[in-house]
Length: 401
Length: 57
Image (cartoon, rainbow over all chains, first blue to last red; front, side, top):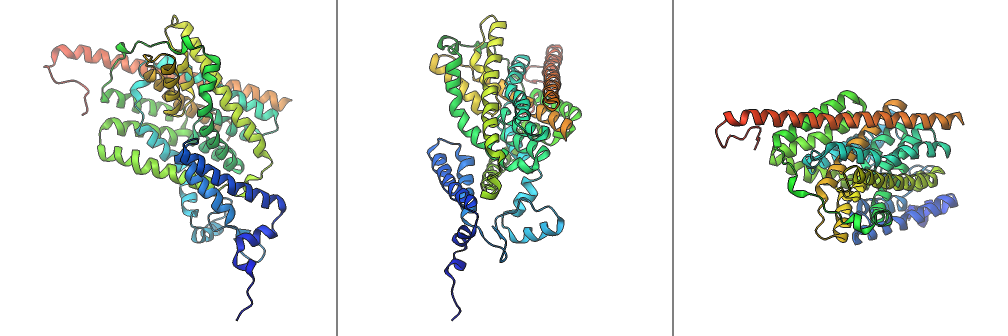
């Protein structure tokens, strides 16, 4: 009978015993954090679509560290650092999630697929109700994306890293993923994780920001919903195609994002039901699921214990807070310029996570006045927010890449 | 310090460019909308009832 080494059988524990104490502590914390994400996702405190697969991935990958060779520790999930063709071919045959990571995640395809799904569930007609006001609010709600950039530079990040973390202020997960892949590949894992964590948490915080900055009598302003113009499908498709072409012409570096988003809108309006069902179902949910899972698996202690993570956590929340305040300032400006007929709560919807911030705005308005309907205008600002975020991401990438 | 001031300048340039392009998009929407509505209004009297122009489905 061969000699049996218990630690050789249970390599997850053996690698804990043999690792640096900081890594061991990191692994244990991340395992419990993963379990907490699953619990909070299932409970509805955090976004379940992202947090449940992410939590399972995070706890599993930090438990499943083994000896790849007598001296090298690692996992057989994926290797985000594999770049040389020969090394990549090896890991593609060994790591079970490597094909999804290499062929959809590290080239930004998954972000585009999520964007296509967002396009299919977005009614561009809302944006067309009042495009100038909606776009103005969306620009104000990008305040965090802009101000965080010099703040991050002052805190020691490079321009590229600062731009990547500043994009958290746009509150658009796929956009942060895309920008950080383009500009700060070494930090894209912690930046994307910080972004998705905060996107889940901050939407719970925005209602408090609204209540703090906007008095109840202004939150309850009812908008004139009797004179909302209606648009035909052909008109919406024309807008989508023309704007997509214009944006691709101006900013080719973000053309994959623009094309994916507007393609989704065109498919929705074209009425080709099998495409609509396919993209809003399997494509959107499949991409979101694998996005969460891959993000979780990327949360290995060795990757996450980057000294810049604390800095990224501070900058991420700063960006989202400033963007929220900027959006509300935009709402107030439109309120004053419209002769006090515009509900300033709509400003928060300029922070672009379709449709969450628009729903937050509608809920706050309805809580103040049960007859207040502001959702169409809030959705307009929300969709404009997606477009302005993509424009700012494209300008950053074009200038800094 | 120069590095930080450079980031402030870059921020202003990014915002100016983003504001210009965003407003261009908003103007494009308004122009196309006005054009389509004008064409539909002009065509409406000459079309028989029920043939709504521009309807895809």
